[in-house]
Amino acid sequence: MSGHSITVTNDEALVLFEFFARFSDSDELAIQHPAEEIALLRISAQLDKSTADMFEKDHAARLRAARERVVSS
Image (tube, rainbow, N blue to C red; front, side, top):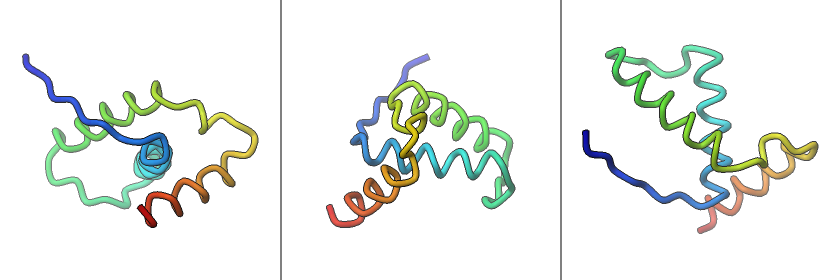
């Protein structure tokens, strides 16, 4: 199986981690096929390995700042 690589900034990784965490806790997105959920969860698992910001005490502040930087870039 061949793979694809994507590059995201640390800020994007933190923002996406939060998005995927919210997604996994609810049905906010309309999944049309089980493969979509599997693919999203696999990406989420890769993000879990890429940044430790989500485990810091000031996670909420880091997330707010990351979101602002992503929007302004």
